[in-house]
Amino acid sequence: MKPPSLTSRALFAALLPTALVAVMLAVIFLFGRVADMDEAHYQRAVAIGQRLSASAEFALFADNRPTLHALAEATLREPDVYAVSLLDRQGHSLVAAGRPTAESPTLPSTKGIQRTKLANGDQLLAGPVLETQVSLDDLYAPHTNLAQKPLLGYVVIEISSSGLNERVKSLLLAGGLITFGGLLLGWLLAVQLTRNVTDPIEHITDIVNKIGAGNFLSRVKPDVSGSTRALGEGVNSMAEQIRTAQKKSGTAHCRCHQ
Image (cartoon, rainbow, N blue to C red; front, side, top):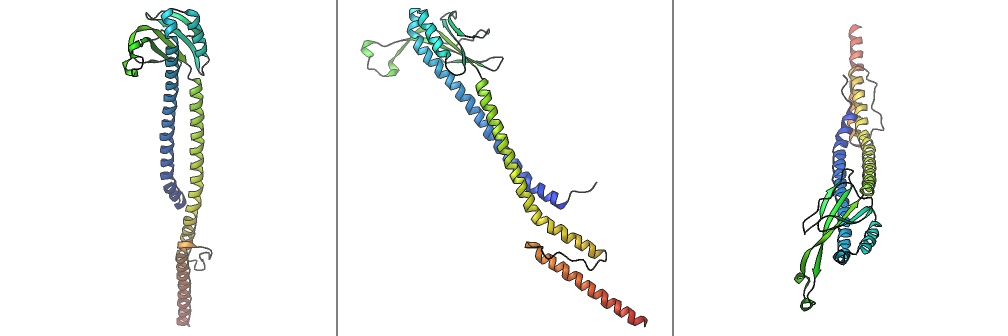
């Protein structure tokens, strides 16, 4: 098997570190951006749920179904939201809008938001609706003095991940194209730089082989420049000296025979 040429080896040595660094940076950046986008998607869903929970508190307390339905329909108009449900404290449905999933949500305790990944990749968020009351004596008290009262019910929001997935795909495609473009540019530059070094060396090597085979008229091209100019001139000088020595040796040999 023929070993790789000097140009191929120099190109590989020049391009490999650049390619590894470019790919690693692209992967780190893209994974970080995808994680940020997923977190932003979740935080937006949490904000929607908290807003609905605060708005539905009095309607749940008064069991005002029309108001609850209006709140659910208003929340349904938020981007990516395709189902909204309001449950009583036992977890029984009071109002449902949109296209609720058949899966039963896991209801949280009186604190926090319960996040569930659905089978199709969408998200289901369930949060409690708590009754709050401010005493007249504490009307101007800090927020930390607010007393939390019993659980009134739950809000359940289902959010599609299709929009997020499309944005992730667009980001990955753009990142892949940018990385490919950077690698292509790096490859072109590496090819140009390696050829400027390896082509003169390969030419000089070829001339040296020809001289070694007895062709003392072979010369390095005068357009060899850069760091190999002195080497080319030295090879030419060596070839001329050998040719001169061969002529003298041949002339002396002829005289001896005469």
